[in-house]
Amino acid sequence: MSDNTPTPPKLNDDGYCFGCGPGNPIGLKLTFSWNDTTGDYETVYTPTREHQGWEGRIHGGLIAVVFDEVLSRVVLLKRGYKWVTAELTTRMIRPVNIGQTMHFKGRITLEKSRLTISQGEAFGGDGTLLASAHCKMMLVPPSQMAEMERTGGSG
Image 1 (cartoon, rainbow, N blue to C red):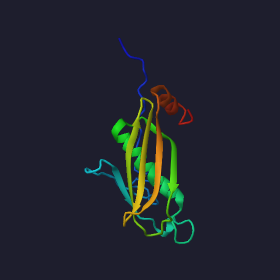
Image 2: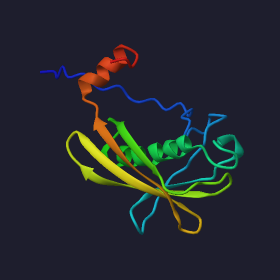
Image 3: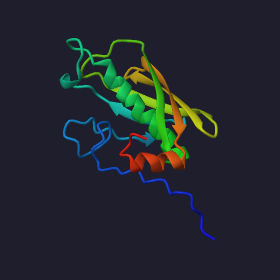
């Protein structure tokens, strides 16, 4: 007897992700690690002038990109690769200057069968809270994954 349930397509990583892809010449090339003491998933990001909004200040959208990376990746690593970001809420608390190193931390705060919530913070080198975020990740059902593959993602 065979199971006719479609196998979800594998997500392909060609190294060109804007946030973490080592092959993307204009990407952030973020790297990540687990903090064994706190259990947080972490990354460090130092914005350059190419990342500015107002003169000397980082564009807030790039802070959101880094949060999307760290908060989605903690879910993907803990719960598997069938999750997508459904909602990302970012709160800017203090201005961030170009060249100011930011330390991002994220963790899962809620796990349900089809919803996972992660949250995190970004701190300056002196420990000042700069931004916070929370992310809702939704499980993509196998049938929808197969449909997305057939239609090129327009599901």
